[in-house]
Image (cartoon, rainbow, N blue to C red; front, side):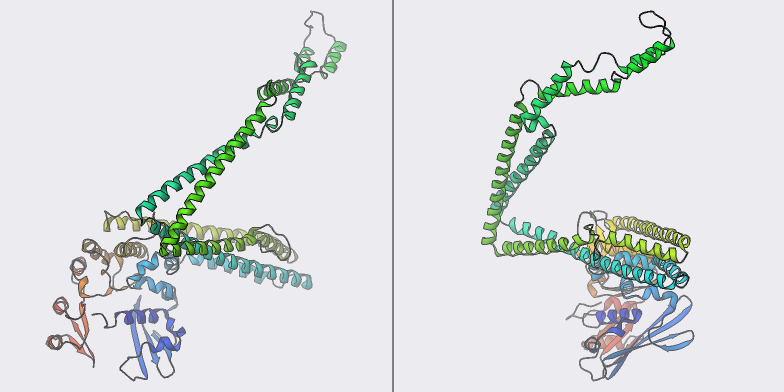
Length: 615
């Protein structure tokens, strides 16, 4: 299909037919599909599918007079109004999931951009991991139903249930607002990182300025590290009280002198006399009778135990080591360190000021640098505002109007226990909580396991497709997160998308078609030869809207991998008389008032329109 023949229009209509999304289009969007040169009041677009063994037809009827689209679905029981595919296939027909198998070259960028297509959601939809979440919700609903009318005090139950409902709504509202702010924070943070990179790139355009700025920044960073090291050393020293003032040093010294004066600790410990009382003879050789034994044990309490002796000896040694003979030396050393820290901090401020002066000078000289700097300041202010807004969700506030999510969660749990208590269902609630935790853990485990397996398989395919490119998928989240980079070239990104989708759909029990606009156009010739053989592993049905520049190295390798199971269709407008004559001379052709369709490999390979890129 040459450019302008309707590739993008057909792709969009396929997405709308398979997802039912057109029922929500506004009038302006509907009217975009009316032929410019025509005055038709109606039109239709029809897709015929085979879902398992069941044939399904989805028809989109365009009413251009009312600017509306009406769906009709034909299936086993006949034709019905509306978008009504078989229930077991509806999970594949959500707008987000349809984009995973009906896509154009932008799919790769969307897979790598969390603001668009959500890669993890595609995985969850395909493997039905979300069923575990639905089960958890069903468990909660079942518990609510059982406890609805089982209380002996109906007014008390109503009051507690109202409190629980109010707290639950507030908790969900705070969670939603917190999630929205966190998403906005992450997006702003990512934009700030990109803007800082752009700012650094603009600064580095002028070589002499870049070198001087780099040297100043390295000096500032070195001084910053020195400030931190000296500050930590001072804090460590200040743990000893004698360092803070000579008064502490003198008092500690007086304590040691006092212990020496009263000859503490004694040379004999309490344990010596306790053990002596157990002997038959005293150390002097006289027998120890019961009366003497009691006296020894009684007087042993006047002596310190061995632990106390050890402690006092340790205290005296520590005091001597810390204080010494000069009570002022430790404080003087601290003052010297503080003076040194002050000097380094001043040097750090001066170095930072020099960096700021160079940056401001660059901003005054170069409008691009100034614009980047202003955008950084704006993003920093926005990020700071978002962070302040997020603080209320974890500030420990226990007031009635708190926004703290953890506090609200505890109150919801308490309210649930109150409801359970009055309805005599505490045991049932505990079972519900255990089952919900099992389902949550199962969802987390299944999701992580599948995402990790798909990632590893995709990375293996990326290695096969691009053995010399250092590009890998680090993890699958809202989007595909690449290891060490935000994205590669257009061709690399498309190859990553193919590798991800191939790994994903090969692990599913269902075979989905792939419908692709320009499947190889951004990919260089060397990698096209690897992409072609990959296609049959992606799906059993692959429909590609291609232009002539994509044939080389792609179509032949694709055909070789598929064998004879390839259909070649050429579609073009009636603008070239020679091509029209050639097409009419071909047996397998059909015409409309403004276009021609030709079936066959020979015409496909020979087809070329001089004024347009073609297939």
